[in-house]
Length: 164
Image 1 (tube, one colour):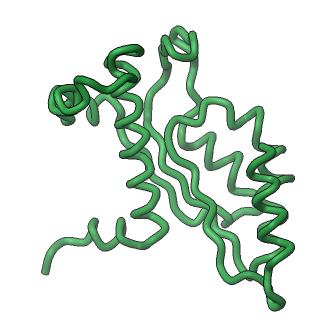
Image 2 (image 1 turned 60 degrees about the vertical axis):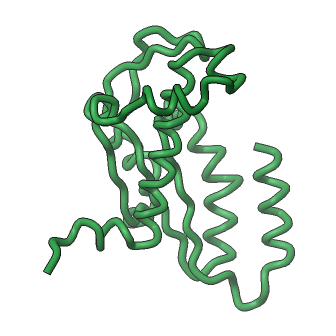
């Protein structure tokens, strides 16, 4: 949290008067501990940005899955709070969450050709040391970052419209 706080302190100290314009705060990936960190995020990130901006919008993308098993973190079948729980935790005051999306992780995995990425990264240290599970999680995180970026730029809505 400290680097975020230092960066935020700098932003607020150098903010022009009038306040910052619109600010988007984005969350992506599977946020397994948001229920334990949301108070700190509110105090150190969201509240100061809301005070220094004309409008603060929150966007998030996550995956729908009930449990997670991760050799990296040592978790086995750990329960995962879902998108609705993220919405409940982040949408205070109501309306702060401007847009959110969730992708079915099982379906994403079925539709992703991980073998192509493994071949591309065959010599990469992470794949050699940590295995393919870590590589899959990195690709999922990058996909989630892309999805939340499409949300805040408005491109997700444009992509969802039928072609005319």
